[in-house]
Image (cartoon, rainbow, N blue to C red):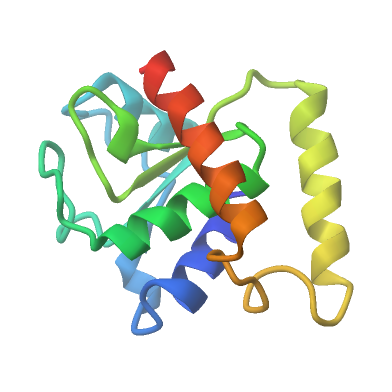
Length: 147
């Protein structure tokens, strides 16, 4: 799921990303916000964490935020964005379901199917078609209320 997030981010927001621009699992227990502890379990990534640090908000262009919302809509609520946290971290993405949740397996199967089908999945999506705009907006309202 997080690989799908990173791929779409690369294709649609920042194709200049390098391997070192994406961080994930760490054993460093020093966290500045509770949600950052997800790096310890390998259930979170940060994309350009130095460019979008904890507490910085409004760093992304509106169209980039929409793409992020579209990615989250594809993930059907199984991934949460740090930009929706009370103390935002726009570089942060984490798995947002409990271990063993069947929704995660179902969505992962859907995304794997896209990867195996030419013309589907990351690199082929237009996040700005009306039905995708609606789905992203609806999920954003749901996740922002939950924050």
